[in-house]
Amino acid sequence: MKIFITATGTDVGKTYVSALIAKNLAQKGVNVGYFKPLASGNSHTQNGKLIADDAKFVRDFAGLKSDIFTMFGYAFKEPYSPHLAAKIENFAPNKDEIVKKITELEKHYEILIIEGSGGVVCPFGEFMQIDLIKELNCDVLLVSSSNLGAINSAVLSTSYLKNEGIKTKGIILNNFNENLLIHSDNAVMIERLCGVKILAKVANGDTTIKNIC
Image 1 (cartoon, rainbow, N blue to C red):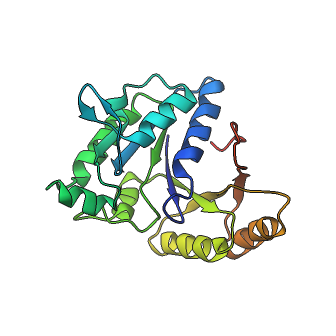
Image 2: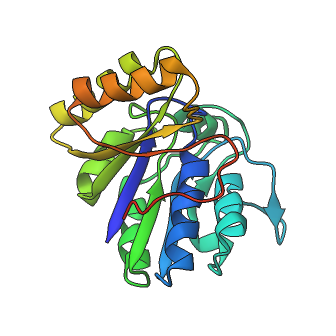
Image 3: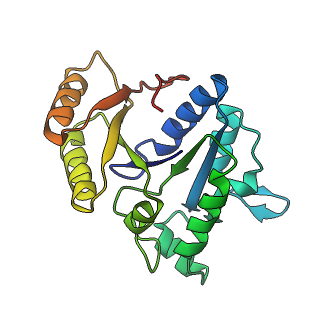
């Protein structure tokens, strides 16, 4: 089984949520893997090669034993949208190669978490992130902010996915504070307007998450 984690925008919390889910599954004894197709804004290296910072964070946080070089497709230095970060390095990401890597990787895990880049609409070069999601034909989880503006972003994101023929399995609210009225109301309105169930509300600093998969 594989699941694709995307978000309503950049820096909403995809990596943090991915790490929480991976940790939860690993602690239950599930053989879980993680893969980041395209990662930009990376600074860590291993054996003299640039690695995906997000993949390193997830592996360390969740205690995964995977080889770091199997946990991402392409890693770029500049903190830009993947298409621009790749262009600066005169590189063109190949969708077929990414799909091939994921297909092979999936054979080794019970559940494979695939973390996207940026928000739902994200150019990867000659193809869009949505094209990859379609070809992978997997469940999609949407990570959303809990703050002001979250309703609009969540509705637009789920509507776009629906128009592209992709079903959103559920929404995860990040940085949720149950003591803030706006967060509680946003949760109600997002679920109502999107027609998608909120599977979890993650508070700042949480180290665990309820069962998602």
